[in-house]
Length: 86
Image 1 (spheres, rainbow, N blue to C red):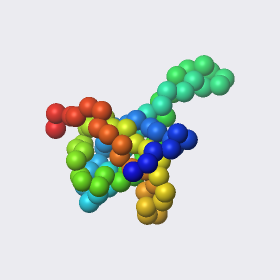
Image 2: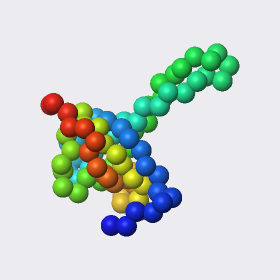
Image 3: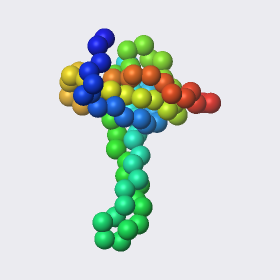
């Protein structure tokens, strides 16, 4: 599969792998509040296509944007960065 230079890539932890060929990952971002200047953790969930069901809960993974595969799924698994001990 060809990867474009302009494709968005994200890193996050797998929080669920209960569905077939789909995982849910959580991306955590630190942002600074514009007025109070305090660091806030922002969490966002992504539905990711995992063709061979190779990732497990707790894995650190890298995902890439792709065409819409279903209603909520428009990301696919690029690689597993670090395996978990679960």
